Picture (cartoon, rainbow, N blue to C red):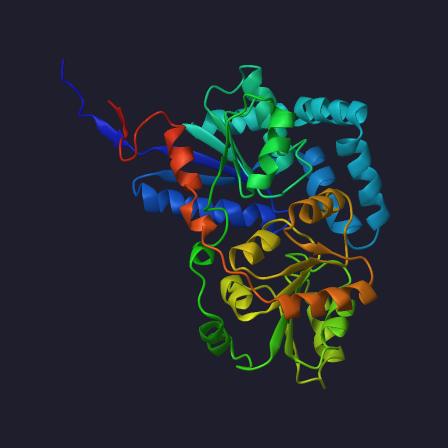
Length: 381
């Protein structure tokens, strides 16, 4: 009998995301990069968890969002109350989405064969938690949480480890997942540059922004939603503002419309989707943002005062309440209130912090969940 030589196989991590805004895709990308940095031989597979659960789940979770976010915002409020806020219908929806999409997700995990599954999207996390609790998935499940509130899908009793960007979220996560839930506050779910952002001078120089005066950064998130035009107009009012930068995300229609509308104002600058958020945040004196989540966290990491304005629908209502409760951002609902909040933030200035540098990495907990120390590998023969 001839013995076959052993074959070394890298640690395999499956990261499940969903293309429903940068709040899910970005953490998937940054975590994948961090995993490779900490364990170069790791094999990271990133996939769309919604696609695995089937067309019906994708239509409700992703396709419908692209409509209601822009045209039927009141429907998003109703949907959030029905499927997330109100207990009886929420539990029914959670069971239904598992019944419809669980088999597809279970099949994907079996085909890829990871040693740990990570989810960056709440609906996927809910289904994975139920599959894990029911013994249908035999490897650890890690939930990546990037919102500060509304944890009923982000957290689950069946999840092995919850990783959050906000220490303020831990109490609610345990309320949903159980008092014994394993929860860690980590870094690694945002761009690495936010741990050591550049100086305002260097960032302004790199971006071609004025060296003097105040800069207001207006963002509609990855989808460019909310009253972005109103926020820009209001931000231009203070005399000490030398530049208002509007980030339109992937909303090309908004970018074109604002570019035309503001063409004669040298103090206004309109940008599309950007990978340079660290520099924009470092250069600015205040952020006006409509969708919360990671962008507010990034502002906090830079010590940048943040104001939530212009959308506040569905889960954002819960996040806005948490922003106010924990002092993470100012929350306003009218342009008059926004003007007052901007002037107040400009007078207060930045409050740099180093607390995020002391947090453990998300990758360290994901790798530990494989049950093997960093650098070790599977061997098959």
